[in-house]
Length: 216
Length: 205
Image (cartoon, rainbow over all chains, first blue to last red; front, side, top):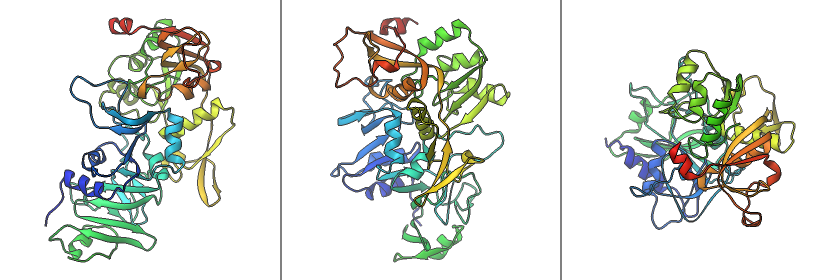
């Protein structure tokens, strides 16, 4: 089977982001989605530290320490972009003004609960940032992650065992193996990578899947 | 309260002055818990901060905080970033509390009052106010009106409103009338003191 690599997964997510969408890409792998947004669509990237209309990384020597993204990397502002304070920035999330956010995850439950901020390990220093605000605020929460952990355990689970970021917030899960919708009736497989059988996918998933796509 | 998101908007010279001034037993509100060994990290290093209220303490370069936390030398109140912002806003606006959807059903809402309003669940959170806010802006006039620079604005405008005494470091102080009234971000009523720290002094510091 043809597992997607990180860039292919980012491109797969990017293909689903529509013209005119206001989008926040979480720290880490979701940031890669920006590299694959279709050039013919006008998409507005929001960065929680106070940017709308965020552009790509600046050229060498053009970095500005006052112009960074949520991951504290240097970025640029597109023509028409703007700056605002944290009150406004989180009103954009919490107030339901963002169309889409893309987040990484440790676990997603069958009901769409998300765990992505804390492993719960006693010696870990917890850090949450804006993850909880994004998860409850964006109209559509997309998760991108590996289908299973490094040791082969499912990351899609009946109930999250890691501390939750938010309850029933995830709309769609993109993994290196499949695209899965979280619906009122459970998890529904929208797409699978070539060469993967539905039964194989089900064995790597901790909750029942329904099949709504062809193939496999 | 100390402004900034990472080092963007961090009032490093005001923090250095606070270290020199020597106040102890401080509670600090900031989005992070210091980067490298300067600014907020330098303040933490003096062990005069009893408690930090922040959303994202753990970073690649937060070794000063990490060490203190592991030794049990500093108390951490972890607050989701948007709740940090709206609790600060609530203090500045004189509100008694807010109901926020962020954090509902999570560890960070444990033991807190919740309420369903029009079918949606919320957590009661209290305002965060401060005796002092130290923030950084780009330009100020004699009345304390402020404008900021790019994404360094972050917590400045909301912290300025939430403290009894707001002290601002700016790159430039301009005459009254030089700031476009349509573009002023923080009205001077929220600002008590302005200190000019020119870019060249910053580079030398």
